[in-house]
Amino acid sequence: MVMATPRMTVVADTREQTPFEFSEGVLVVRRALTTGDYSLDGMENEVAFERKSIDDLVNTLIHGWRRFADELSRMQTLRHKAVVVEASVADIIQHRYRSGAHPHAVLAAANTVFLTYGVPVFFWGSRPHCRHMLENTLEQIWKRRQ
Image 1 (spheres, rainbow, N blue to C red):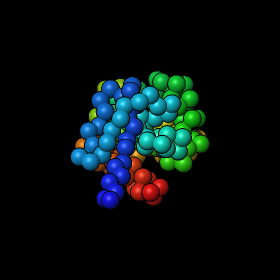
Image 2 (image 1 turned 60 degrees about the vertical axis):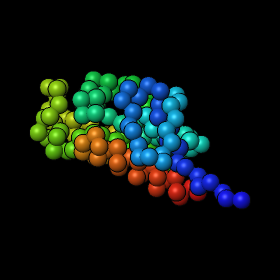
Image 3 (image 1 turned 90 degrees about the vertical axis):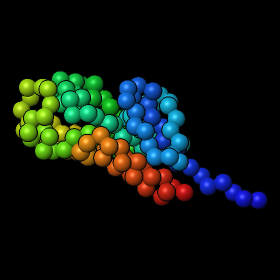
């Protein structure tokens, strides 16, 4: 009898408006997540990644802090967590976002996320690069559990 190779199953939150399309062979299911936009099936209490576009990040850090702080509080107890940004630090420094917030204020707020809640903020560049890095990270977590 031939055993089927298990496939990684990514859970994408139902509120995620523009979910990533991962590589062929990665199963994606849409389900409401308590925390974050992406997790792994069966590991929702251990893994949460919150995806942000550059404009969403800036708006959240500068104007939506209270609601975001609740999310970060839930994330801080998880084993694997991060805020993943579809932009680079250079994009922030060069003010490639629509808010009038100063780049230094944005970066300081991003550092506050890590220093206060222990949740790293990864600036993974463009949307395709962010998708690639998230898939790679989720795959490494998944393989370690197998």
